Length: 267
Image 1 (cartoon, rainbow, N blue to C red):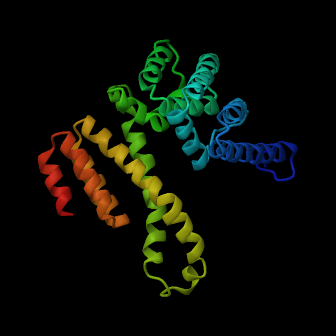
Image 2: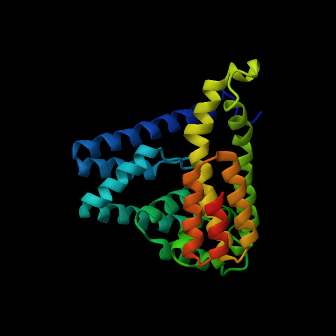
């Protein structure tokens, strides 16, 4: 058993303590923002970004409070940009750090610095050896930045893996949603229905919607309208969400895909 999965190992315990501390710090940043103490909030946010770990998993309230800081405090924006500058320097020297890539993507998105990130992608991929870990994270979690900077062409060859990952997400919640909608018909499932409903509806379904829109836009960018139509039909069938279908129709309209727009509006 790996030391990182053995619950009695020092490495595992340290990892859990680190995760707990990081989540607590993120929640405290949100509390400080709510109280109007923007300076202390940015100080603690900097500590969060300096934290070490195998991945960066910001909680929703942390992202929301940083958006408030960016909207209300020019001083906070300057501080966050300095933090991002530091992360870029670190990342260039350590492209195999998944956590660093995720932090750079996260802050670049919040600070609307998509062009800077895509420029870094091009720079790091000019050498003979591919920065595999960086590209792996950038192609999925950073896809929105490539779209925002009109450089989706840079990750075109990664579209199959991006789509595959999304379809796995969708498949994971499909069975849960099927049985949740057939409440009380299957005793074994009904015993766990509350747990699965929370996971499927509150967490996984919104994630699937976000990922579906991303893949839908990428498909249209690459002229793969048949894949875009498939995404629309499949997700609408699974989620049964009229608003989602309307959202996809609007995206298709912005790309000038009138036939696809009409198809989605009829679903």
